[in-house]
Each structure stands twice: as structure tokens, then as C-alpha cells.
Amino acid sequence: MYQGKSTLGGKIALWIVILIAVAWAIFPFYWAIVTSFKQPGVIMTTPSLFPWLQFTPTLANWKDEFTQRWPEISRALGNSLIVSVGATLVAITLGTMAGYGLARFRFRRWKNKDMTMWFLSQRFLPPMATVIPFFMVMKFLNLLDTQLALILVNATFTMPFAVLTLRDVFKELPKEMEESAWVDGASHFQAFFRIALPLAAPAIAAAAVICFAFSWNEFLFALILTYRNAQPITVVIAGVEHTQGVQFWFVATRLLIAILPPALLALTAQRYIVRGLTFGAVKG
Amino acid sequence: MPERSRVKYVFVLPGIIWVLCFTIFPLLYSLRLAFFQARLGKPETFIWLENFRRALFDDYRFWNSMSVTVFFVACSVVCTVSLGLALALLFNRPLRGQRLFRALFTTPLFTAPIALGYLGLTIFHEQVGAVNTVLLALGVENPPAWFSSIWPARIAIVLVDIWQWTPFCFLVLLAGLQSLPDEIYEAAWLDTSSSWDIFRHITLPLLTPVLFTVSILRMVEAFKVLDIPFSMTSGGPGAATQTYSFYIYLTGLRNFNAGYASALAYILLIVMLLISLSFFNRLRQIYE
Image (cartoon, rainbow over all chains, first blue to last red; front, side):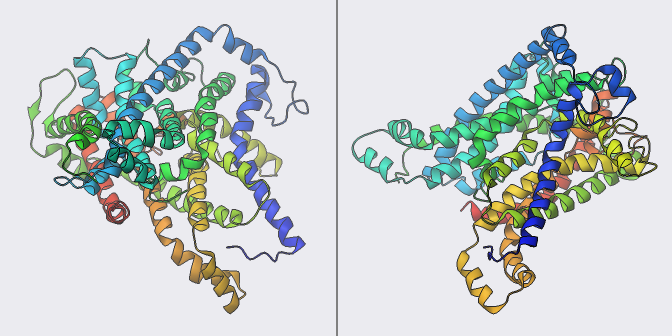
């Protein structure tokens, strides 16, 4: 706990540090936004940070992005959306059930702890170790360049996260209500669907948001497993520099389009972020 | 709790089977590949441990990428954890607008690293990038040529990673600080009035488990780094920012040397396993 006896000078110093921290956190976004309103000619000749003062902002880049380049961008966004939603649905459905099972029942042959640790160990697996076999398998199954391939991959890599977070959430819910439902003759599934699920709904939604963001931001597998039709937005932005060196203006507009959906969505999951990202090791 | 019922397996098994199918088979397959001379589309020959021997004793690019990665991990972990701790201590008090700050510090975590790398490319651009613009304005005469010299390039990718992950350390350590019991502090303030003493003798020891958790998680993530060097420097100049994952990527997916890449991947897997073992022991107690 902080002992509140600060002087005016101390307060001012505190706020200066806080302002620096905020500026540091915002700066890359600010830079991307400012750059997206610069004219291509201006970007490469005069370095500038402030619109109106140093250059006249223009909407041309954004107009370009939403007209001429829109077919490519919208397809990529659509792919990202389908892949992320699909992977999230699978990961959350199976993850909620497994999380509930690990929290509520006791397993003998493989102990609960071991199963939980096994799910955790998946997060430590370097994706590089599985990407080549995945490529071979998808090629064999004729799934290269399909959204389904990416859904399978992302569901696999986000599911352990869902299991661990939701196990933790179910553990904290009182089990008395479910027990009395069992006494009243409800089956395990009825107790799960009617009592535990509604109580855990906010946490499940938050876990879903985080799974969505992970899948949206995934790059390596998307790069290897797609080459045209199923390319998500992360792969499409990776193509921006190929034609004529770095084109700052596309970089800026496209990055903003790619970054914003998961970043904004994640704000709704605030309460569960600490617990989620540490796999329940630290309570948020 | 009814323990006889078989229904519990219905809850747990689908998830386990799914993850098992999609990770065990690829892992076994690449384990097999690691012992073969295998290029995509060509016949394979079994060569025992030759791939591993070559990596450890006969491949300067392996050691280069390893040392680049170790540098990256060390800088990133030390900086993110200490900056995160400093910020968390700063924010661990009644402050107006704290929720807003926390929201602000959440967004970098969910920014696609690949996008961030490209953004870094424009921010560190040598002539018209933001960083050199600011440095020039501050009167620095020869701002670094970020992407054409070795150490500036390494520092640039670390800085981007620090930007992204400091908020994570901040949020987790703040949660850790806020869960410490008030009573100890009340008692301690009776004995001393030095905040440094309080920090050193009370906060730091109590926070050690959380600091440990954060450091290990950061270390594991940093070891896997690929997206940022991929998009920001393409591993250059030369191989100065070629991290280990990036080297595996080049070996297996650009040069199609699948066997050697699998061996490299398994070496990474073993390193990660060693790092995370200590963490697992601690978590084992939490997951009781």
C-alpha cells in the first residue's frame, strides 16, 4: 500500500512520469495515424510529426485504400474474420467443457494437475517445431490455402489458453448450486448448461475475445499455409513492401486497419487479461 | 462430488483429443525428420544425429542466431520487467484516471507483432522516421543508421518488443502489488519511514513469485520471436538480427531443408523445456 504523504513537487514529478509513459504507449499509434494522412510526396522528403503545422493532411491514402485497394483488403479482412471466429468457436466450446471438467471432477488415472500442466505446456511449444509437419499434412489433405486449415491451427493453439483460464474461473464459482441441482435430479449437463455456464458467461466472453485476438494476429502459420484466396490480413500487410520499397502510406493505413479490431475488442476483456495471460498464475 | 460417473470424460476428452491430434503427430513427424537428410520433394536418407552434430559443431549461422536471440531475450526480459515494475509501483496508489491508463496499456498487447514490425520500419527509418526526426530536433548530429548497422538494428527490434511487452509486465505486476496485504505495510510504516526500505524488505520479497512468473513467461515468448525481425529488418543487416526462429524459418521454408530445420526446431524445444521446467514446478503447486 502506498502511504499518502506526498508534496506538491512529488505530485508534479509523478504526473510528468505518467505523461511520459502515456506518450510512450500512444506514440506508435499516433505516428501511424499521422502518417496515414500524409501525401506520399511529403513522406519521403520532409520528416514531420504534426499535421497542419508541418504538412497539410490529406484523405487520399484512405480513399485509395477503400476504393482501389478495397477488393484485396476486404477479402483479407473477411478471411481474418472467418478464421478468427471459427477458431474461437472451436477453442471456446471445447475449452469451456475441458475447463469445467478439470475444475469440477476429480480424475484418478491422470490427475487433474497433470492434465492442466499438459495444456499449459502446449503454450510453451515453439510453433516453429510444428509448422513444417503442418504444411505437409495440409498439403496431403488438400487444405492448403483454405480458411479451414487456419481455423484448425488457431483453434489448437488458443485452446490451451481457454482451458486454463476457464478452469480457473469455474473453480472460483460456488459449486453448491450445481450440487443442489444434482440432488434435484438434474443431469451433469443440465447443471452445466443452466447454472455454471450463465454464471461464467462474462469470463467466457472475455476468453473468447482474447482467443479471437490471438488468432487474428497469428502470422507464421498464415504465411505458410495460405498463398492467395485464404490470406488473412496479417499476410496481406506483409506484402506491402515488396513492390517499390517501403511505402509508408500504405503501411500506415493498412496497419491501422489490421491492428484496430483485436486491440479495441481486447478492451472489453480488461478484467480477465492478467489472469488469462498468466494462465491463472496471477489473479487479476 | 460424484466420482464414479463417466460423464466427466465427456467434458475433458474432446479438448484433449483435439490438442493431442494436432500437436503430437506434427511433433513426432518432425522428430523423425530431424534424423533424416530431407529436402521437400526429394528422397530422404536416414543420417542418425548428423543434423544435430552439424548444428552444434559445424554451423556458424546456428551460433550467430542463438547469440542474437540470447541478446534479444536478455534485453527484452530485463527491460520489460524492470520498466513494468517501475510503472506498477508508480500506479499502485489512488490515482485519478487509473482505469484509462490501464486500458491504454492494454492495447499494445493485442497489436499484431507483424504489423508492429512494419510500423517499426517507418518509425526507425533513417531519413524520415519518427525516431531520427526527434533525435535531430534534439540536436543529435548523426542519428544512428538503424537498419544498416549491426547494433542499432538489434536495439531497434528490442525496442519494439519492449514497447509491446512492458504493458504486460506492468498489468501483471500491478495486479500482484494490489493483492499484497495492507496490514504488513501498516505495521512496517511504524518501524521506518523510508520507502526504499519498505520496497527492499517487504514489497520485493512478497512480489518475488509474481516477478518470477512474469520473467519466465516473457523469456519463453521472447525466445520464439519471429514476426518483428521478419517484418522490420528481414534479419539484416547481414544476419545481425536473424533470431533463432527466423533461422529455422529460412532453413526449412525458404531453403526447404526440412530435416535440418526440424533438428534446429527440436533444439529450440529442448531449450524452452529447460527454461519452463522451473516454472512448471511452481505452477504445479498453484494448480493443486
